[in-house]
Length: 498
Image 1 (cartoon, rainbow, N blue to C red):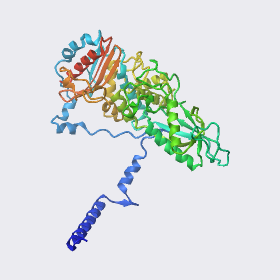
Image 2: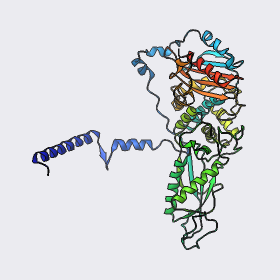
Image 3: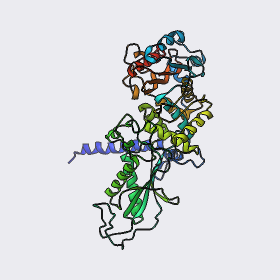
Image 4: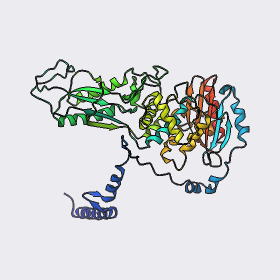
């Protein structure tokens, strides 16, 4: 038993705690039905953001970033320097010219360096020449998707049914088409047909399907349904499923439904991006996983999932959404994710009312970039990933895209810049900028890489010595070897930071 003095101290502490708690509540107040009004109002304000369907309403765009002038003042850089000429390391023609003549970059590489604040081209060498961009084309993909869809847009994957009635427990048990191990157990019923509808989310994984299966099972139980036939609908996309390069470890068949990007080696459990063996039928595989998850939740299934278009008058049973497009853009750029890239250009096409195909996506992306007054004449955007060797764009377009993403009036494009890998630290630049002539760029340069056989490119941003943000693009064709070409590109960009 506690001593009297201990009881007194305990009681006093409790009273003091209650007083302090009451004071905190008073300061935080006011409250309404157990929820602080400010929190409730904030939550309500967030409810209008995002969503998969626009219905003619544009989603909320993020507020512009804080003024750079205040931040720079703390660093000892005057706000007036933002409008002053860029303080560059000498004459760029003298600095970059000899480096561009390196045989490691092939016969005629292209270069463009732009002052982001003014849009002025500070250096250009074949900057208007159409060249194969490889994965730097993903910068164009990102800008178009963010501009057309908005950064908060999310891609849905839904489950629907046209059967609105309850299950019939008086039907005979044991249908011959039941999945083995899931035969009717005395509560037989005609199966209710449900359809898993792909919305084009290239980041859908088993966790997302598990959540979707749980919501579906609950909705079906509420309807008295215990046995289903599963269909899957991939009709959102049209045209060829296979990328023109054919079956390849760098990309799955382009379909509106997939789980784990159709990876067969388990790599999707850790991260997306990078080569991996791919399924030839990612949509069918995703539907099989979904059906298994339904069975884990007590539903019986009739037969194997089969492809089929969802009825137009179907009721939605459940839905799961992708992360916002801004997050998808960052993941795509950091990891150079080809599956996300092809998904985003098709989402852009859908928003524009065009076919969600390779051809429709090219038309939609080019039209969106033209709306942004970007130099797209002659540009060929045959895909969103850059795997197509017939893609063509210019170094000038790449730097213009980056400058537009930094425009204070275009805050919806900001994740183009934040998604670029950091030299020596993240994504496809993690292992680069290690040579002595490039280490000055480590941690200071953010850039998108591009690599195909004989094609190497690099486009990104760097803060120059005077505190000015520069956008650069370097493109090389017929380079003799990828490793030496990449080191030469690293050296070029590092010169802008030194």
